[in-house]
Image (cartoon, rainbow, N blue to C red; front, side, top):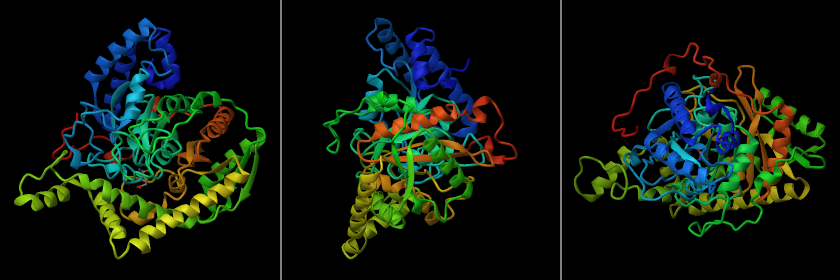
Length: 510
Ligand code: GLN
C-alpha cells in the first residue's frame, strides 16, 4: 500500500497506532518523490538523510508518548522560500544557488515541534513571483492532472506534489494567491490565513505586507490540522497577532444552516471561463441546499485590485530584494571589476526576467517623481478595497467565488504575455490587500478533466467559518477526488516534453 495516498491526519493516526513506523512513512514518501520527479519536477531538494534522521528521533518520542499530536511522524514538503537550517533554500532562483540558511523559519519549526518530518523543498516561481511555476530557475513543475499544463503558482511544486501523492501535505506561501490558485489548478485544498496568523519569520520576503504562510493538503480536515499547528504568536515577527481562537479543527462540522454567503456579481462577468462559472455556481447551489442563505451582491472596485496589488507587491519586492547583492548570500558573479560591477553582474546573472521586471516596476513606482501618482494611489485603493469587504462582511459570513478565471493553462502559454497572466490573479489578490482569510477547494473538473477550484473568502480571523462551510461542501461531494496520475494513469499522452528534465547550468540541488 502506498502510504502517500492517505490523508495527513489519517497517516498520523496509523503512525500513532503503530500500524506504520515513521521510517516507513518517510521511506515511502521519498520513494514516491523519486519515482515521480522525472515527470513532475515538483521538488528542488529532497532531504533523504535528514528526513530519516528526523524519523528516528520522532519515533522515539512517539514510543515514549511525548509527541502524540495529529502530525507526529507525518512527512511534509516545504516550499523553497522557507528557510531550513542546514538545508538548501533557493526560492527557485539562481541568486540563491548554494544558499544554506543558519536558521529555520518559524512555520517550519512549529511543524517540526509537532513531530512532522521535513522531506524536502518544493519548486516555485522565482521568489514567488508568478502564477505558473514557470519562472523557476529549475524549470517548470508539471500539473499531474495533465503533464502538458502548469500546476499554477507560485506554490506549484507543493500543490503538484500533494495532488500526485508524492507527499501527503505541504507548506505554501500566499502573497496574491500563491496557495489558492495552484491548489485550484491541482485539485487540492489550501488556506491563506488572515495576515498575522502564521509567523513570517524565515519566510524569504516578497511583499511583506501581503505574505502569509499556509497549509496545502488533500482535504479541509488536513488543512485545519496543519493550520492549528502553524498559527501562533511569534515575537520574532512584528506583524504576528495574538489569537485565542486557533482550535481550527473544532470547526470541522458539516453544518452551514443559516450561514449567509454572498456571491459578488462583479466576479462572474466577462473574463471568467463558462465552465468554471458553472462549476462554482453549482457548488453555491449545494451550499444553499444544505441550508445556507446564498445571494448575490455588488462588491465594487474589482477592476482596481490587480493594478493596486502589482504596484504594492512590486514596490515591496524591489525593496526586499535589495539584499541580494552577491555579498551576503548565494550567487556572486565570477568575473567583475570593482564593487559596483560585482553588484551589477551578480544581480544581472542571478535574477530571472520576471523578477527583474518586478524590481524595475517597483523601483519606478517608488521613485520620487512617481511615488504619489502610483504607490500612494495604490495604497489608497487598497484602503478602499478593504472598506468594500468590510461592507460585504456586515451582511455576509463569507464570499463565494472562483479561485481563478480559468483552469490550468498549457505550459509555455502564460509568460508570453505577463500582463494577461497578472489579470488571472483577479480573484485572489484583494484577499491579501485586505489581509483577509481565504480557502481554495476543489469544485469539480472541466470538460478536459482539469480541476476547477473555488474560493471562500472570510473576514479577518474568520477561518473557522470557512473551514466549516468548506468541510460541509467536501462532505456533500463525497470527499477528496484523487488525481488520475496518482492512481497510476498516464496523463502525458502526446506531450513530448513530459518526461526528462534538463538541469540548468550552475545547479547544486539534489
Ligand atoms: N501570482 C501573483 C504574483 O505573481 C501571486 C504570487 C504569490 O502569491 N506569491 O505576484
